[in-house]
Length: 148
Image (cartoon, rainbow, N blue to C red; front, side):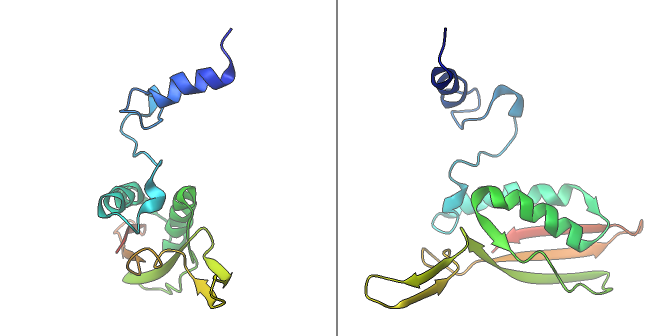
């Protein structure tokens, strides 16, 4: 009888999708195994933006609803942003939302200096979630978001 550990090793490590750890029923998905390194690597940032781009495939009742769903999606790689947006009654608009990863960093470093940052800009440039929305003729909103 196979142990659970051996089953997982066979099913995920040598999976059919190039070893990304995805089961065979998940063709076409973006692997999330290294998406947490998006601030260090431009290729990973491009893959993360493709992952986020799945939000643009649908229409939403409000921009807030789109941000809530996007927030749940990016929580898988530790990214957080404020999902409450003061959109008002604007039919079109844009917003740049600050990001944090793993809750940010707080406290003191080895030298005794205060730390209070988003955990992202310590490894690279300061990144923001750029969100654009437009009201469609059917009164739904099309929302496009990416990290810049």
